[in-house]
Image 1: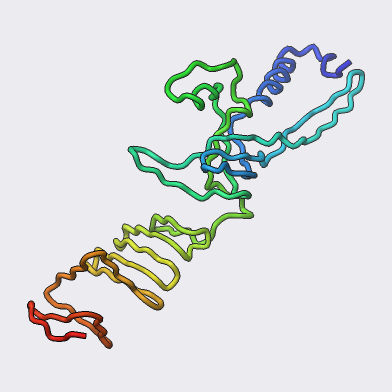
Image 2: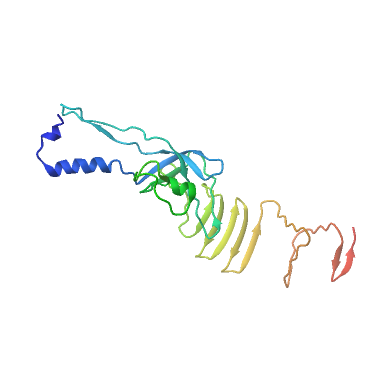
Length: 234
């Protein structure tokens, strides 16, 4: 006999029953991506927190608690921020951490057909109905040098980034020593490169400014004209 059955305590029995039911209600869990579909829209995810199983053999007061690994979740819809015909995608890779969120109803019919659908069965908060949100990190993989003033689209190490800083304000595109900086405070646009800046135009490149200052040697390949007058021919 289960020793808890000896207790003539309705509240205790109700609590045990509710705890057992809630243990099967899945809301959200961290996970680790194991595979990404070829089109980048679904992932296979291993839940990163194990389950808990309590065993109390009949006729004994012995309770054994184990933590079995949860099953691999496959074909989980992957969240890419989108709206109004605009989409931001990420090259999700195996090993990326994510947050799994479980729908309160079956998503099978909606996932297959879109629109408003009837649930295919009565399951609720089931492991089969997960969505994956990348970008959540454990302390073991947390990114460094998070800006406290700017919004960034950046590589994990921060060496390549697109930065919008309203405190300056400025917008910058940085790739190591190469950068384009638009500074509203100084009304200056700066383009810098560690080696070479290439400006290409299929038919014409126009630079329109009251003054154009050139520092260093100037090389011209082709005809050079000033105010329509040819001054140099190769």
